[in-house]
Image 1 (cartoon, each protein chain N blue to C red):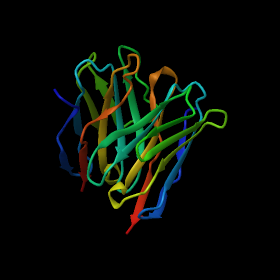
Image 2 (cartoon, helix red, strand yellow):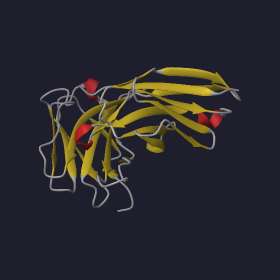
Image 3 (cartoon, rainbow over the protein chains, first blue to last red):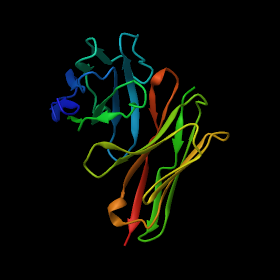
Length: 115
Length: 110
C-alpha cells in the first residue's frame, strides 16, 4: 500500500479481555516499530523488528504484551487481560534501512479504550 | 543505554522564534530527526541532519547539532499558530533503531 496501515482504527474492549492490533508496513520496509502514546503524553517505545533479527522487546511494559512479525510483512501486537492503564493510541511505524532512506513512516494508530 | 530527552512544554508568542532542545546518548548515531505531530494526526518527518553536519537550514527551520555535547536543537523562526504541535526528537542509534524522545508540546499564543 501507499502508507503504513493499522487496524482497527478504534477499539473499545472490556477490562480483562485480550486484544490484537494489526500493522501493515510499507512494502519492502525491513524495520517495524510499535509505540504507545497515552493521552497528552509522548511516544513510548514498545518493540522493534529489523529483518530476520531477534526483535528488541525492551520497551514492552509487561508480559501481557507481545508482538509478532512474519518476515518483513504484517505485525500484530497482542495485549492480554487488558487493564484500564492500557488505554492509549498504539502507533506502528516502518522504515527502509538502506542508505539515506531511514525516515520512519507512521500509521494513523489504533486508539484503544479499555472500559 | 539509548535515551533521548527533551523538555515537555514550550510556549511562545506568535512571531517570536521557538527553540526546542534535545539531548541524546548514543554517540554512534548517524542521523538525528525532528518529527512533528499535529493535533489528532500522526507523526511526520519535519527535518533531519546527518551526524557529520553542524547545522541545517530549511526555510523557517534551523537544526543545530553539537555532537560533542550530544545536543540537538530545532529553531522555528517567526512562529505561527499553525506551528502548534508536538515536536519529537529522534536518533538513529546503533543497530539502526530509531529512538524517540517523549516530545515537546509547542503552544503558540496569538
